[in-house]
Length: 428
Image 1 (cartoon, one colour):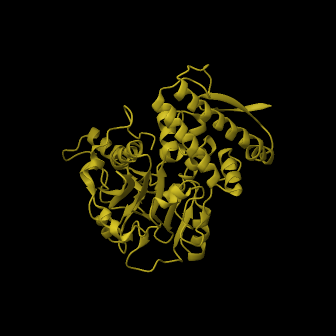
Image 2 (cartoon, one colour; image 1 turned 120 degrees about the horizontal axis):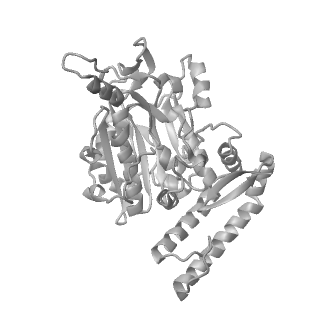
Image 3 (cartoon, helix red, strand yellow; image 1 turned 90 degrees about the vertical axis):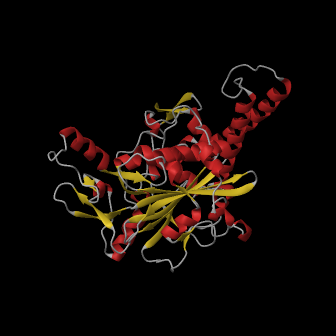
């Protein structure tokens, strides 16, 4: 009867194959209470260990650890409790069913109010750290073609007619960081293997039909290239090896905006599984040349974990830049050289926000989209520069006195050491 094996906190346990309603009901009631009780008992034991310096009997809840690790895990456990309380019963059931593969992932539309754009299970701390929804500065938002889509642990705004995300927002907190440092959610773990395909978001498909436009799909990006960087042909000084390398570097990939790794490290096992699957929404990707995607872009994604380790929690807003939205560059199919519906970005941006020395601090990165290995630190800019490029107002609710946050950035952002040896963001 115990047919599904999962790993949690270094231990393996068998999950009975029962009807989904029974499983989710148990998890929301008895199991949930037991988990909260276990965490509470463990925190009490942590306090006793710190006070008495007694070496306890080794087990999951009482394994001897150094004081900094005890404090880190205690903080992470409290964060998990806050994360669980932020999710509604409907969200909890959805997360469990998506994690178990019983239903497909799907976003929900924005609600009314200032917090209506927040991800489904963000806490107040998670949502407030962005200082408001990113909004256009100069024009009225097009409600017909622009959709805000809320997933479990990230939110995105997507232009249905333009076939591109406008921005994506996510956060890395102590729990996410600890899950990354523990290393228990690699792609080699079957529970966190990358999905085989990117899925079409139902909200986008429905809106596309109303607008009478074709919705982008996984296949839109397959075997395609950016015509500004065509593949090289052998001859005229180009060797076969050079042509092969250029094709590998310039081929279009499905570039995550909100990263896969940051999502699968969120919260509990089930929350991480659901968030990872959701990150494979077509609403969360842009065409990205392979060498731009990794190691350049993935290095910046990884650095966000480094900043989270230094600053406790960081908030990110990420997206593409198109210099001319009226006449963008569309990707083309290698076979037939036909234009696709999806434009290729000219640049890609990151806005990172945190509290540094008790004050709000933010930094931007504006990376050219080209098949070269770039050091993202060389492309650091004030947030104001990205606002001018994109026409998006970030942190619109930041207090007036803090507007200087967007006009310059603290050089300390560029001096943060890697959180662990070999941290490269390969599983991005």
